[in-house]
Image 1 (tube, rainbow, N blue to C red):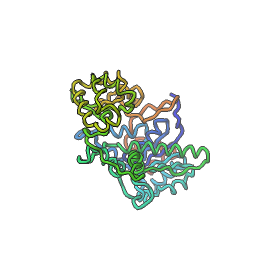
Image 2 (image 1 turned 180 degrees about the vertical axis):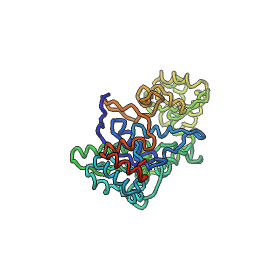
Image 3 (image 1 turned 45 degrees about the vertical axis):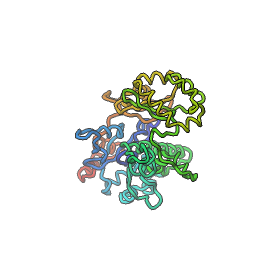
Image 4 (image 1 turned 120 degrees about the vertical axis):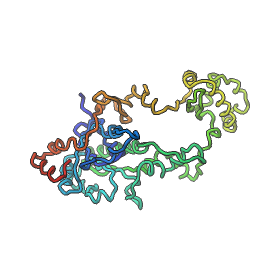
Length: 398
C-alpha cells in the first residue's frame, strides 16, 4: 500500500468528545500514527454516547476514532505524566480540548510540553478561546458554536418559531477541520523555521465564521432582519417548495435574466412572462408572495421524481431535501469518496471532507478498545517489559 502524506508523523490525541479527536482523525486519514490517550477504565467519555436510544452502539466512536491506537494512562499520577512526557519527546503533534484549568492541573499546558519538545505542534481547541474573561468556561458546539454566534437564532423557520436545535457534531466537525488546517499550517512553518508552537482555534470563532455573512452586516452597522416566513421570502425563485408526494426541494435560480424564460417554459408557466407583476427582477421582488403562491400550486401537481427530471433538463440549480436515510445511501457521495468502506469491508463511514491528487487516504480501521495498544505504544517508546509491568501494578496503565 502506498505511504500516506503523513506517514511517520506521530500524533498524541489527548482530547475528548468530538472536535479535538476529529482533527486527529483527519491526520490519521493521511497516514499519521495517532495515539489516543484515554483514562483507564471507561476511557474517553465519548465512548458512552449512545446514538440510538435503547441500543448499545459505538457508531459515533467508530467515526471519530478510526485508525487510532489507544493508550490508557492515568495522567493524574506522576508516573503517568512521565509516560506522556516521554511520548511527547518524540512526537510531532499534541491535540487537546481539555478546559484550561484542567490542563494546568495535569501539567499539560503548551509551555509544559514545548519545554520537553520545542518542535512540537500543540493543537488546542477551546469553547470560547484562550483569552478574555470566558477563557476557562466550558462549552459544547451546541452552546458555543450554534447558540452563541447567532446561527441558532437565524435559522429558525420564522422569527416567531422556537430556535432550531443543532445536530450532534454540527459545529464540532467544521471546527475540527479548522484545527487540522491550523496544525498543518504550523507544520509548514516548522519546515521553514524548525520551531514548533501553538495552533489553536475555538468553537466560538468557527461559529462566527459560519455565520460571517450576517455578522459582517452587523459589523458595518446594518440591522439584520429575522428570517421571514417561507411565503414572505424576498425571492420566490430562491425558495423551497413541496411536491405532490409531500417531498420538498430548494430552488436557487439566481441568474434570472438568463434562466427565467427557460424555467417558466419547463414548468408550463410561460404565461407569467407577460405578467407585469413579474416582468422585471424588481417587480418579482415586490410580488414575491404572489409568485410563491403560484409556484406552490404548480409544484403541487407532480411528484419530486418528475420535477427532478424537468428542472435538471432546464438547467435549474436545485436540491432535494434529503432524509438522513437518503444521504447515507447517496450514490454521488460514494462516487466522490465522501462515504467509504471500513478496511474490514463491513459497513461504511464518513470520510474527511477533502482530497489531494495522487494521495490515497488510509483505509479506515476500526476504532480501538480502551487501552488496546497500551503495551505496544510503550514498547515503541522504549519501555521495557519490567517498566510496563510496574505501571500496570500501580494501576497507571490500562
